[in-house]
Length: 336
Image 1 (cartoon, rainbow, N blue to C red):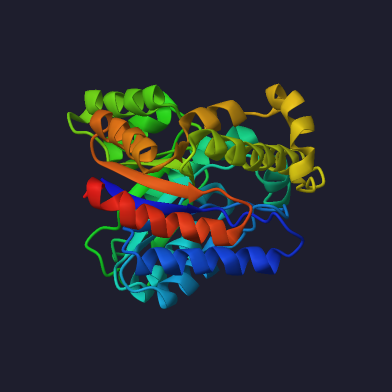
Image 2 (cartoon, rainbow, N blue to C red):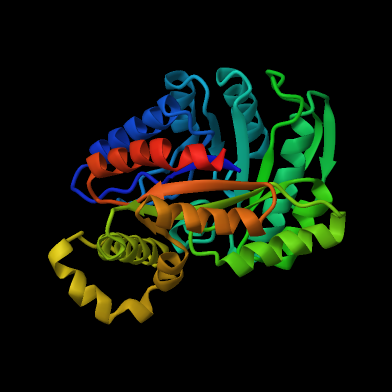
């Protein structure tokens, strides 16, 4: 099992700059505590999840860390020029001394498709074409590529990557088409914070049925540590709810809601309207060290080649730092 941190640069206050700085401090701490990986999301046109430019953030993280692997979870491939993204990836691999993981996703929020001049109907196919073109560009050879959306002639990029092959992952919500593509291409899978254990196992088994090997599979999970499990659950619920509400607002091009802990009871009455808040909570890792370890060991026992992306989920950055330290001291030794 590889243990990492999943960073979405959540902004629970009024300062996006503070949200960025707080998350970067958490990532530097994860490196100091010998976590294996950090994964960055990509979200645009909202003031809550402040990760519109993962390339700049990954460059900064590469310079500020020494050992932790850095990864995208994932680049919204349809919204990039493939040659430019290939160049960015090659440069990031060099800047990080070969510590780069690359994940891709298709996106689909309404403001994204409008501003980046794409349609939802094309996103999946464009993602697949982009990934294959980028993989060929990263080979260091001059390539020709002729597909429905992408046409390259005698194209190449520099610099050459440091790794023989950059580990590549595809985000999926258990889509058989995505899993089949990843399996046939030798890519890993990335599962969301709300993916159930069964969904993760089914994805891995479908992959195995195609290749007779299990994928490297990154499973994102909300984390909240507290000696009292009910207190942990109580504290984690408003954070999950606000995340879901903010993402729904971003997807619908609405103003971002203001975070107010006292208003949480009002939020509970409309929980059914939140896309996957219940699944996020059901899948979360929370409670004391024994509770958290038990949940992790269950995941590990059912999912081969597991990478865990932990998202410490307090609205207070100091509590998130404390949880990361506690996890590294009390839980991580039992996972290694």
